[in-house]
Length: 146
Ligand SMILES: [Zn+2]
Ligand SMILES: [Zn+2]
Image 1 (cartoon, rainbow, N blue to C red):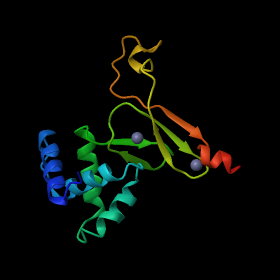
Image 2 (tube, protein in one colour):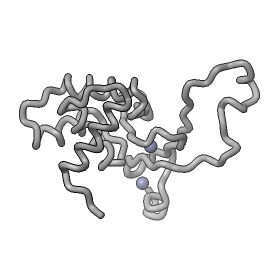
Image 3 (tube, rainbow, N blue to C red):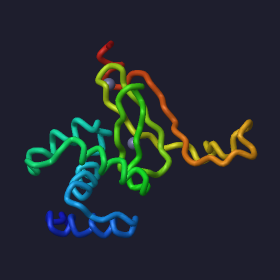
């Protein structure tokens, strides 16, 4: 059943509150955007899309919202290209594959045996987070001979 905007805002406000965050307009919109756009957008993409419905929005408040959501564990920043951070609202363990043909970042599931805390060489370390990154060509681009 599709949720109307009001219900979805209420659900997101609850999610923010239970993570200890005040559900400001910017935070609710940023979180909703990331929930709906699973393509790992950049700050700029988020800012430009939200500006259409929130004309008074500043880039700084998008940055601040993302930082707060990140600290609360609701959103995960992803550094794939070195310079530009992407944002992901799936915070469970998964890997990322970036296609050098189309530039799309794909999610992939990790085999259950892959875990940094069980890795040789990390015994005694406390692992807060880990990233699994892969680069190459997606099937579409590989087929197109890029
Ligand atoms: Zn591709
Ligand atoms: Zn992801």
